Structures are given as structure tokens and as C-alpha cells.
Length: 128
Image (spheres, one colour):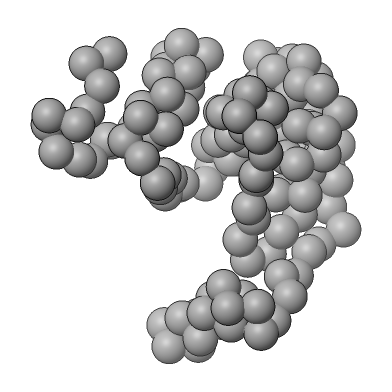
């Protein structure tokens, strides 16, 4: 029920409960992914690949954090491509319009097939 889900997510966000993880690995999903998505994953550095693997194993929610220039956008673009290839619908939120536009621009550059809807005030949306 929706109230149970809301309570579980709230307890995660305030730190009252630790997130749960499965034992699945990227290799468990790899055979079902398009070759270009697998190649994009393999082109990432070990820390980026581990962040994606942890996100894929997470049952609740995942947080990918890092310093500016550490590759968060490339990591998220690859993760989004993996999730879409697995049949998931993804809701992506960002603190700033610029961050969201940078991510969506990279996603569009890497994957012309993935459709997305960008919601926001017209004056704040990147022209690309």
C-alpha cells in the first residue's frame, strides 16, 4: 500500500533504516543489454562501474555523489541507459536546471532512442 511505501522511504531518508541490497551483479543483466550500453559501462573507470553496480543492486534508492569533474554525469547517463534497456521507467530529479540539462544533453548525445520528457519553466530549459 502507498502508506507503507511512503513510511519505508521516509525512514530511509532520515537514516532510521539502512537501504537493502540484492546479490545480483552487472553480469546477471549484461546478456540482456544492447552491446553499445555494455561498451559504455566497460568504458567507465572502476569507481563509476562500482557505483552503477551498487545502484543496480539497491532495493530502495541509490545516491551517487562525488566531487566536480569526478564523472557523476557520465555514470548517471550510463545507469539510465542500463535501466531503460532493462525496461524501467525512470524519474530523474536534480537540484539545478543546469545539472539536469547537462545530464539530458549527454543522454541524448549517447542514445538517440531513449525518449524523455523535460519538465520545467521554459526560460530555465537548455535550448539544446
